[in-house]
Image (cartoon, rainbow, N blue to C red; front, side, top):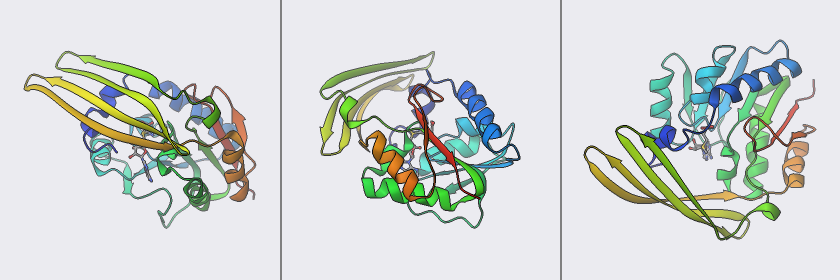
Length: 233
Ligand SMILES: C[S@@+](CC[C@H](N)C(=O)[O-])C[C@H]1O[C@@H](n2cnc3c(N)ncnc32)[C@H](O)[C@@H]1O
């Protein structure tokens, strides 16, 4: 998924305020679990949330992409990172909070995997622990055939990237075209990003199946909504 873009990831998403989102998240965690000390960020990417969350919590990260994990490990050399699939990972510890941010959950693609991933995250929570997931887009609000273009502009790095929002079954399909300019020249490449489109009810059902009553906040940490709740004691 991010094989060709891991080293550019932070430049691509330069518009996202990770510090603000992380501070909001810590406030919410402390509201629902005041004694919280530990956190696992599932689908942590380049570790940018973790760099802020670790000011308040003993935070660790897990991701499927080795390139992104390499960036995360450089950013946060003192933190522990795991390589794993959110549907299957098994760590020998449980956390006060498990979070899955910026729609990482969508990459598991199928409804069956949505349930598996959420169940797996709940398995890694202590009783009374806090789970939060930022969802991907809903199927009935998805803009099919919508053209998207973005630009990253740094002194020595320019990236133009665009795609048409396609749909394949219950997934969104982006064939993203990148043009990356550095002092060494201009490079063109493509990367496919395919993510599951699930309804509000499907997210709630997956939480319910895993034993958590989901609360929903439309604004969320970054305008994409969030589902959250605590594991029963
Ligand atoms: C849009 S990025 C979000 C990264 C990070 N949470 C952030 O806010 O910048 C999606 C992340 O999910 C990870 N991912 C996708 N499928 C995964 C899976 N099955 N298990 C673990 N991580 C996965 C990707 O490698 C990527 O880091």
